[in-house]
Length: 66
Image 1 (cartoon, rainbow, N blue to C red):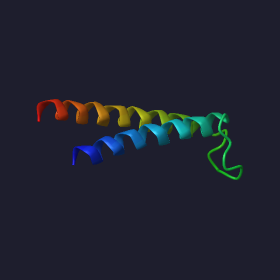
Image 2 (image 1 turned 90 degrees about the vertical axis):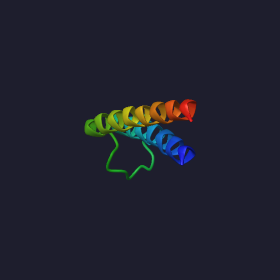
Image 3 (image 1 turned 45 degrees about the vertical axis):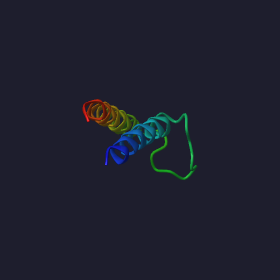
Image 4 (image 1 turned 180 degrees about the vertical axis):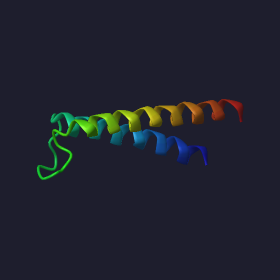
């Protein structure tokens, strides 16, 4: 179960970084994406990445205890 949580946390970070890249226009893929150069997606990407970091920290602390 911890492995699943860890993978989910890492995926949240990766997707958050992709959203930040698309929202800023530095990662314009796919070219038809509605997220490209939309600043709100930079915000949501940062929120998602931060939440993913929190999840991975919590999971790593649970691993040390158990």
